[in-house]
Length: 311
Image 1 (spheres, helix red, strand yellow):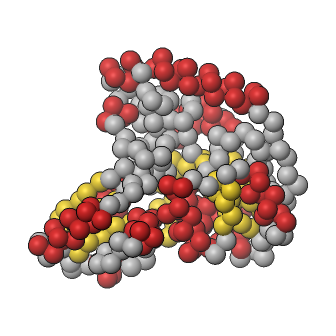
Image 2: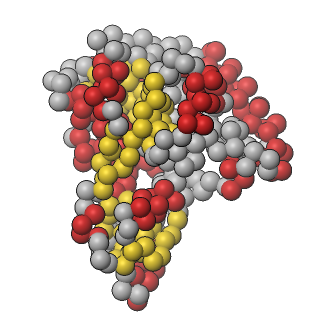
């Protein structure tokens, strides 16, 4: 979804958010009817869904990669499954680069069938919490502590794909960022059975970026989170540009950024996901990217919890 999140998604008392509520209600009713009508496929292999209800920028792909690598170390044969969207091939290329294993299809069910034929024995869905066409062994929902649930409304009145109460269908919630006890209470008010874990992005090439002034740009779900990460590591961020999620960069966009960076003697820096998109477009020359890995607090406990669902 190519989307710039409107400011009123942060404010529950926004007049515009309230005016859009009837549309949100209609969409949710249609969604419920669709779920009632759809038939569900059950597989004999574990299916781990890494999803979200907040639109974009919650860290599903990095967590899917981290789970893949963690399970690979236990002599499992996992595969990441991603529904094919033409405008999301940046994420697919990133997964391929990091894991070497991804299967895409217009149908997640068909992708899983293909994976089983190839003898993969654990399916990791990058996204798919809202896909009711298949049974999941484990639902993991991702949030970011900076955005949480926004104003708490569903699309288009707010940033949620479905009501916050839908988290009761999950077993694990992963929050990227700092601990938020108020948000934890909201989660436990819905279900005390949910396990909560925290993650943080750990830059891998930060040394190369120190002592240089930076022009940063990002076309991801929440660009401000990327800029804040740079600031947290004391990088000299002088200019920043935000684009919609999965933005299809044009040559003129990159030429403008390159010209501006050279004029002001700034290093041009973007996210890994943006870089892979630009590389595919042949526009990556002269652009640096921040390489990160996902650190999981209580990592052993986290993977121990996952193993309860994949026996």
